[in-house]
Image 1: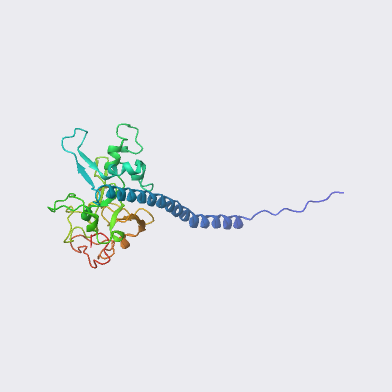
Image 2: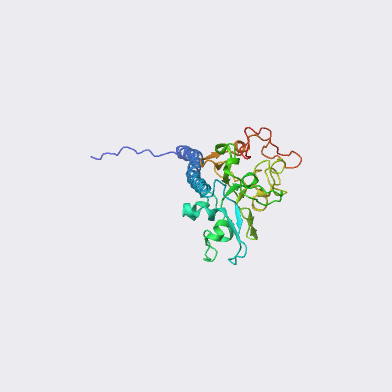
Length: 281
């Protein structure tokens, strides 16, 4: 006697298509979440870098009579190979780690100094010229002649609220293989029109700011040299050593800045000095 096996039922085409559609929908939902989670991890690593550098600056300040670290210094008469020095070199005795001047979320690599094959350019002199973090030079090292370059650093006693005054932020490496600008500075939002600071003619924030030129022209942030690269925000440290994440709007509080604000026709101005976090008041 023969026994017939029960008939096995397979998936229909409609059922397979439904399953595939569900998987596609879940992937579309989860992949951005995974990307945001990875970026959050990089942002936390960056925040750690910034915290270490801020503490290094605070230690420097303690060793140099309560005077803020300069963004650049010049040694006259030196042959090596340029007589300018930048603040990342000045905090190295306290940090002993050059890697912290590079943000893990920014793949920009001026001339291949971080990952390039040419060993001659992968040395600290180049790393200190193109850090991915910049000091608030408009106020912490103002130019007495209103020339568009840093002057002498201020004394800590001149900073009314250190815990509410920007020390440094994420910054952009602006340029291309034809030439990168040094990136040790960050401009305050209202730098061009503020009565108590000086900057470059196309500095500050807003449309046409130099931080949005060249390699950022197709994706302007309207934040000058500040880089909101961590989930549409950026890390910021303050003159007491603490650090936290800010959106551009949060960092520009106390001004009339908005995305797309122009520099000339809709000049970015300080509207509330009590909440503005860049000056010394």
